Image (tube, rainbow over all chains, first blue to last red; front, side, top):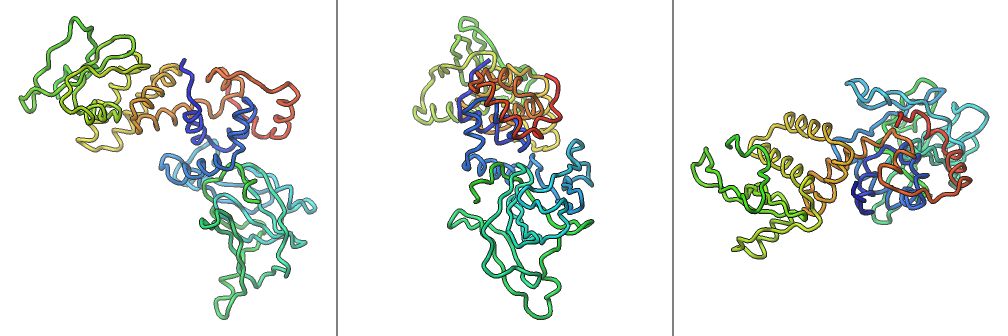
Length: 197
Length: 184
């Protein structure tokens, strides 16, 4: 069989789901470096967004336990991955329940959570990595609207928050993460979220 | 298109076929002659050859060339499969039918062995046939997605350069990713 050049191997790997990539980190050292490379994570994300044959859109269902659901489950979807149970992110680990906390936003498969002691936590449910961030100086509370977004000018992810105004206050509240609530759409999980931190 | 052109024309240099008349236009279709690294001659219609960016630029650089286009590093078997694929894609270009195209592509890929698929990749890469390269790379990804690490090493001919301890540590760290692996 032909030995494939490195750029072809990279291209093949961008088609794989995150779980396979995590598994294949132990194929050899060069694969581990490649799969852990933030540039590769970006290529993988780009592929997931642009390739119409790849469906990585999932809903996070904030129940206890946590689940993710194939976005296209209702129209068939991928049977093997229709419903996947997720462990609570380590960095949110506060007691054994996820029930108290605020969902602050999500972007490119990264979920941002405020736990009950006001730590801001970034979580990549696909790689199961999570990390606490230095929180904002003033307490984020339910009267703030928040969001997580990607800033292409600085190539960085940013969280924003602001005080709700007037009559639409109720609509603008950040969603409370509590049982039996479908709280967000998350798309195209990136592989390595360490470059976000 | 006449039925005689449905499969790649594979001949030796001494028994080259003369161009077949095109039944629809009643004009001889221009043929391009390609030569694989193992000295097989392929006559393909110009429209098919122009799908190969590498061949296209060969003629753009020397428009009046009537030479045989040599394709070093491309052997006959994967080349014939690549030509077969591109011929079909030309038909879909003329008569777009996404459902039929998907069906054809899926069947084309499914019936190929792992070796055939992997051997076609460098050919598609060298000839710069992006659509084919994309479907081949995705097909390879689909074949290894749920396989074991050992299977993948064997598939690509990769030597394991981790120590037993290093590999065990990686597997412990991401134990969840090793669940639900298909049999080799």
